[in-house]
Image 1 (cartoon, rainbow, N blue to C red):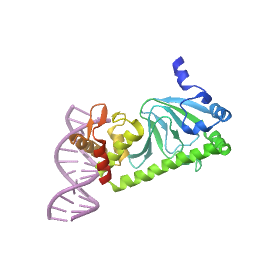
Image 2: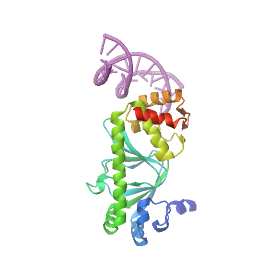
Image 3: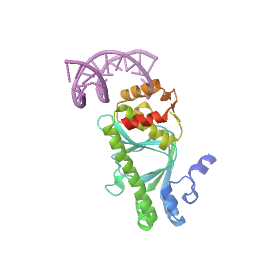
Image 4: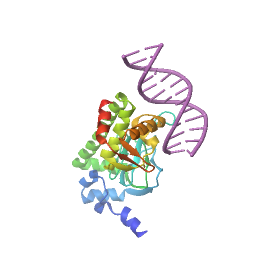
Length: 233
DNA sequence: GCATTAACCACAG
DNA sequence: CTGTGGTTAATGC
């Protein structure tokens, strides 16, 4: 139990797992955050925040992995991005309507800090560098959605899946072999296709020796081939 | 018309 | 949940 609190309940001032945003705060501001935050551990599969509910806090992922997605029509959903440590999770609701516009669920056991929205805004008001870094984070998220919009609307299934695999390789796991924390359903929701189609595309990649799919991991055997498939759509 | 694409469906493991 | 095969509708030569 001691280890648990040493790891997750440390004061924000000395915290080594805060997102880059919060590294721009001085000790006084960090203390403000510390007094108005709460740290919660979620188990794999649990919902961290739900689209449509009231936004009372902004989030920072300390450890673990989560998926951030839009809940679409019927049971379908579109994953906007995978959240890894130590990403900040805000959203349009901060300045628009105080509503969560996407759902976040844990892909593995994850520790998350919930920071009071009012305190977050107070710090935005008093710390220019912090406000700029927040805008930068927000803008880069928007930019990646623009890129994904083009990918998803102008490429066929192999190109979309290649993009997804390259994204996981380059941005998330940074390793050619990554664990199947991401299910086939998730790969489908990342690639804008049905789960049936995702399985078929993955199998064809496997048959062509571009990737190797085993029970608990995926290995990229030929990332260059994936880049080619991504380019030709 | 014909071929391709990709979703939908039922179902087995 | 993972995976398979058949059917079907839309799209593009």
